Length: 80
Image (cartoon, rainbow, N blue to C red; front, top):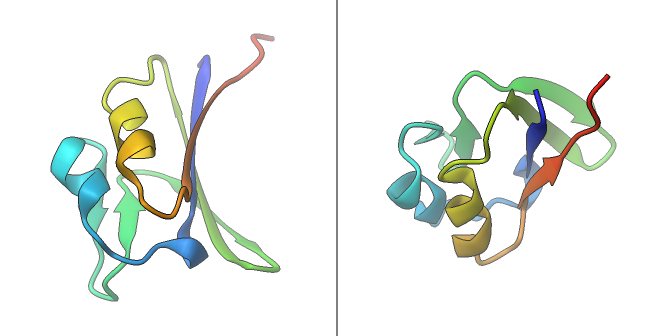
C-alpha cells in the first residue's frame, strides 16, 4: 500500500481534532488520547507509535493538518 499513517501517540493531547475530521480512521481511547483504528502499535523509547498502511491518504491528510501538536504524519511509501 502506498501510504503510511503514523501517530506519535505520546505527543497526543486528546483534542479530538483528528476524530472530528476523520472518524472513519480515528477514535478516542478511554485514556483520553486518540488512536488510529486498526493500527499496529509499536513501543518505542518515547512511548507508543501507531502505524497504518492505506492505499490512499483520504481524510488522514486533514487529520494531519488539524493536529495542533503535529503528532500525525501521512507519508508516501515505496512500492516493492
